Length: 185
Image (tube, rainbow, N blue to C red; front, side, top):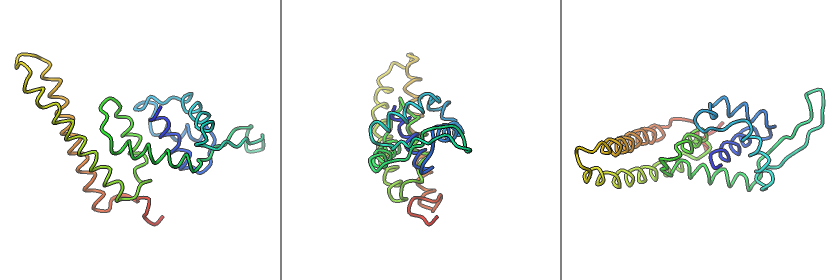
């Protein structure tokens, strides 16, 4: 649920105060149902669970001319801390089994300061180098006739490709790309 937690906390944080439909609409517009397998039910469940944990504050809204009764959510200080913890982890950590965490983190990259984003991306480079270094000897040990060399080669290629992309993003951020958390709005 970490990806869902990051997406829902970040979605509510962006709105300031929002009801479930607004958060769902925003996350679905990102295609999160495709790349993170986040469906509407999991969004509503996460909203209730995060409120139960004290990371979101729920406000019941009565029926009005604006619409039917519903619950609005806003992020708490504890929720902001959890959001930033998950975001930092998503950017810095290499987890080949869960690439959706990085994808979700990139959606909120500009919530970080430029310096912090750069530091986390450099940590990611270290993780990618370690991952590649752990795979290369296995490929060297593999019998050249064994087709599993292709799997190891694909992992090495993936690590190298991710490294090149991360280096490119670092370069773009160093050149001033994107409005980051500390930049004037």
